[in-house]
Length: 125
Ligand code: HEC
Image (tube, rainbow, N blue to C red; front, side):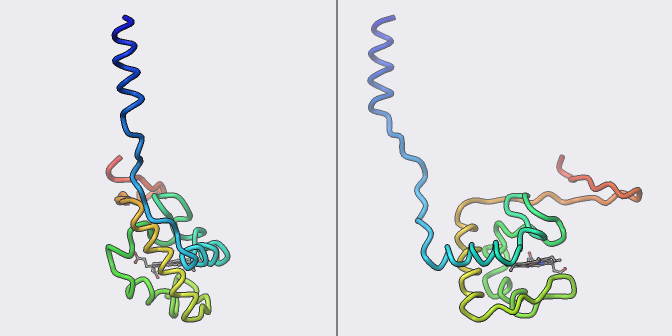
């Protein structure tokens, strides 16, 4: 028992405790995050499935569709997404923030099935 204790302790003390390292957010990313909050993007969009459900999940939108695609929505909005009147710099900041979120992880958004009686069911549940 004592031997196991020492062997295990030696293991615990020497085993690395490194977690995956991500680059710290830059000033620009922080500004983008503030804009994301101020403009209430999360009212309609999700990260990792959390948020409002009017628009799509944005966790990996940049790697899925590219930054120019994401920018197109910010430039003028769509029929369902408002135009926020952002200037060039603000759009750059938000895209930088979305790129940063994208490098943090991968989220496969489930597909939803809409029942005729109004219930929404995730297909891969
Ligand atoms: C009132 C709801 C609403 C708000 C608020 C909103 N969006 Fe959207 N957004 C949408 C909808 C809906 C779509 C899907 C396109 C469509 O149906 O017109 C969309 C699409 C997008 C897309 C393309 C996503 C894809 O996968 O096709 C991006 C990027 C995006 N929005 C970013 C933002 C950002 C950044 C903000 C905050 C500045 C924001 N949206 C605020 C409703 C919204």
